[in-house]
Image 1 (cartoon, one colour):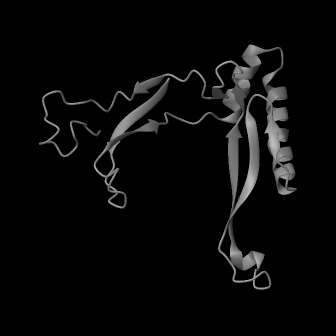
Image 2 (image 1 turned 120 degrees about the horizontal axis):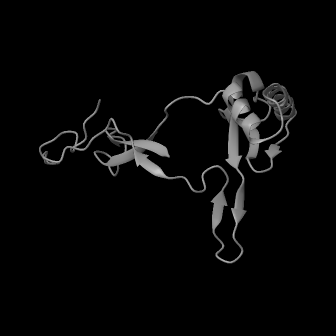
Length: 156
């Protein structure tokens, strides 16, 4: 179940979205490599130590492959690639990686499957996700949205 909370957009830069309510995902922790290795061990015949060894090596190999300008594709998961954030140069001659390349980022694109009949696209990892409002954010039934600056949303 993916938890979410409701918030009001207070950013005045976009007046179409200002003072509107949106959902934001709530994260309840971090899944560490060792925890996932434990779960993988319980689902198959491989020991946790073997799973950890493979996953640790996967991270090292992925880093190497990405830094060699390759897209890393993992079946059932998706692809990873490095992207650049740059500022423009007035000419090719004036371009300098040290000056114009500001940041290296990584982009993940989940694997997607297309249903031939309906032509709908479903992404790996998000298919079948169920939503649940985070319990600490409770709506006030008696407050009027017009008189309440939070629109009936209580913040913890």
